[in-house]
Image (tube, rainbow, N blue to C red):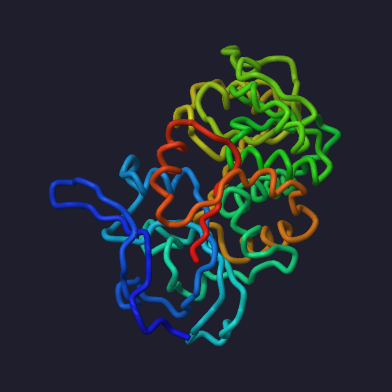
Length: 332
């Protein structure tokens, strides 16, 4: 049933002077961006991109005001598209949420039918949001590497930024898929956490401190969330015909290196874009996440749960490098 009264949403505004403000406010359905499907939201999550948008630290939003939240899981309450019916359990990640259209930090969310994905049978809505964009990115990275003929025999997979949301889920998903995982992190105090998720080795950041064009082959490939020198070093230490996926720029958006890993060892540098993945690819990844690649340690990875009013504190901690794992947002 469509809402007959205003409802809560975490909305982001920009003043005429460029200032920023955000917080929970009461809005109506007419305040939301148009779309064929209306969802009664149950859960969302906090991603680094959400923290940038919600604090005004990064230029994420393309128009104002907008409801924040790039992820949402809930139940369809109305649809003009025959593909979706009232009562369907669904989710959405990326697809312009909290960028060009209102996002998931709202009791009701209105989306184009093309952005909506059926919730996998192997996941509850809360579990789907522990995964969210972070888990989707990690699984998409693995799919890209497998499509590039990566096999466990090439060597262990390195995961940089391993205690973060994408990193934590990648450690779990990669090990679940049969790969030996070496987690690389600057947080030595989280060693046992990473081992519990499936990391065979937990290595310091200095492991990827080399500045030489080539090093001894140590990894079959991996997932990099840092960018900059760490990505260059990982490529320099990747085995012949290994694959490395670039998924983040926590350290730097730059990449200063030679082409030697590519032309001498045939190493592949692959990209992932979780927000603009085509529908068929999104469905394939979520099918894996609800099935063969379903992480075994979702509750361990979920290190926080907040309501809409708790979002600002989570944003600040995330941007300051505090905490680890994933925070889910309880909409109801």
